[in-house]
Image (cartoon, rainbow, N blue to C red; front, side):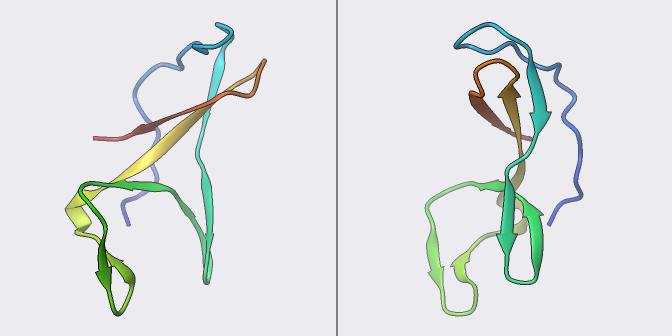
Length: 79
């Protein structure tokens, strides 16, 4: 899994109420730990061993912004 990193984009304003949005991430509780959500390119393909096959270079960490006022969430996959 790629190293955790902060996105270089500035914090956007909420498209719903125009308030400031704070950067964070969606936490995935998995067997044996917690990880940052990732976006994977392409359609899912079954794997006997892992459930879904995913190429390492096809994964992108996802940053999520949350509106301070209304709670709206907006996510971006790092390129």
